[in-house]
Image 1: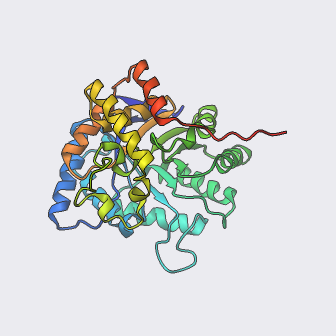
Image 2: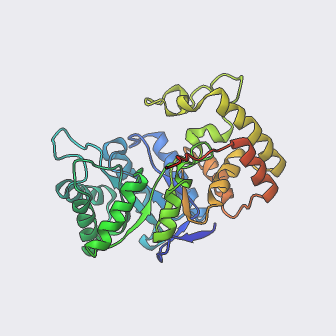
Image 3: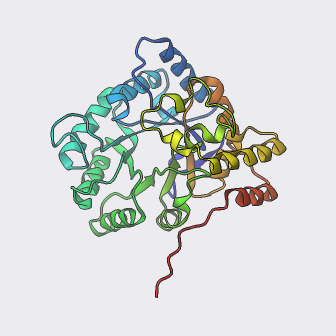
Amino acid sequence: MNYRNLGKWGLKISEVSLGSWVTDLAGTEAEKTALQTVNAAFDAGVNFFDCADAYSGGAAERFLGRALKEHSRSEYVVSSKVFFPMGAGPNERGLSRKHIIEQIDRTLKNMQLDYLDLYFCHRFDPTTPVEETMQVLSDLVAAGKILYYGVSEWSPVQITKAVAVTKELHLRPLSVIQPQYHMLDRYIEDEIIGICEENGIGIVTFSPLAQGLLTGKYRKGRPIPAGSRATWQADRQINNLLTEENLEKVEKLLKIAGELNVPLSVLALAWILRQKQVTSVITGASRPAQLETNVQASGFCIPENALAEIETVLDYKPFVRRIG
């Protein structure tokens, strides 16, 4: 496993990391498998584990806390997020000082930890001033409850405003962002990567395999596999990706992966890691075998001719608006 610094900062994170968007597994066989997956991640050199307070109403945090308890605190980097509703009350959501202060304490209790390494604003809150949010996150760093903080799925303008506020108010800096990024969704290349590079902000990407589409599980002209995410996912994110155009791209990418003698998932993860500003790709794995495949992406360099072929297949056209 290779490790990269979190942007310009000293924290070192494994190139491949493990997310824990799980349902409540307590006392089930699935919990045993999930625990085996976490331990397999440690064995493979993974040191970053991502979570959020809203994942299964806190059950994901409690599971991850139990799993990490078996390991030394210095061995791992762990994150959580705040924003989504955690109750029916008007102050049980968003990025106000009140909600963040209450939620960090609940998260630390759930995970049986004294501090988080990373803490993310899960989404942007238009009802709370950015300076209020940045101030409380900076205060949490000063209090030792979090070490670094960042945002997830904020626009370039929102990120730039947050960075400006931290400088203007002399706050602890915004150090990391967590955007969606994969071969079929490359919006961060247009502006966000440049903003992060200029300000020394690390990038840890989620959904790097496009909800499983970039594993080769879903194929053109074939039925959806029984039990796959496309058969049960409530928000239908994967179903919305299963277009003829995307499935045609998958067929061509599978051919390139075959020529390089790697699984498509490894090719897709290594393609993201070609970006120097990306610190880590947050992968999901429901069993150890999936994790063991994903970690092969660390250190795998895609040849230049294959990268050029991938660009032709993806046919990405950045959004450019001519002014004047």
